[in-house]
Image (cartoon, rainbow, N blue to C red; front, side, top):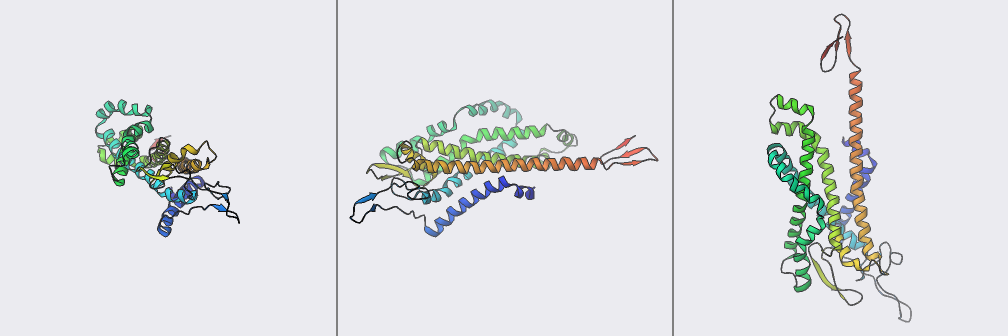
Length: 342
C-alpha cells in the first residue's frame, strides 16, 4: 500500500506541506532562537515620518507586520510548530485513549457500551468550543486578565490539554466502537467465532488489518477538529497557555500569545479585522485554513489509495476466478476454494 500512497499526489502534497512547515519552524528556533525582526519607522531626509508600522503585506512582504511592529512571517513561522504540534499531541492522545477504550468496550463490555452510548452521542450536538470555553475561561482569561496568573505557564498548558483531550474522547470512542461493530458483522468473523477463535485473536489477526486504515483516517480527522477548536477558542479570546501583557502602537495594553501560537494570534488581533489593519488577524486565519486543507488533502489521498487497492484486489480476485481447471475425465471443476461437480 505504501508505494501506491507515495504515488498519490494529494496525499504527498498535504503531508509534505505539513512536514516542511514543522521542520522549518523547528530549524528556525534552533538557528535563530525564535528571534523576530521588527520594522522601523520610515523617515525622509528632513526626519519627518513617512510611514510607520503596522505595514501591509504590500509594503512589507510577504505578510506585513503586526501592531507591535513584528514581522508576521516570522511570527507565523515560530508559531507553526506549537500550533501543529499541539493539534497532533491532543489528537494523538484522544485517538490512543479512545481507540483502546472503544475496542475494549465493543469486544468485552458491549452491554455497558450500549447504556452509555446515548449519553456520549448527545455530545455530537453540544458545541465543543462552548464546552471548552466554559472549562478554560476561569483559568486562562479571568484569572490572568484581572489579577494576574496564579498558575505557572506549564500548569496552564497541561490543564488546557487535558480539557481538550477529554472533550473529544467520548465522540472518538463511539466512532471507533462503530467501526469495530461494522467489521464484526462480516461473515468471516462468524467463521472465526465458530472455529473457537478468542477475542484477542479476533482483534489481532482479523480486525486490525481492517481497522488500521480507518483508525489513521480517524486520527487525521481529529487533527482537523482540534485545529478548528483552537481557532474557535482564539476568537473567544482563550489563548493557549494564557497571554502576555504588552503595549501596542496606540499605547494601549493588549494581551498577546506567549508562544506565537496561531489561535492566540487570532484572538489577540481579531479586533483589527474590520479596520485598516485587517491583514493582522487574516494572516493567522489564512495559515489555519491552509493547514486544515493540507490535512484534508491527506485524507482524500489516503481514501483514494484505499479505493485503488480495493479495485486491484477485486481485479486480482476476478482474474484468479478465471483460472479454474476442468477435469474432463471426472467432470469436476477445481477452483481455488472448493470442488464443484459440473
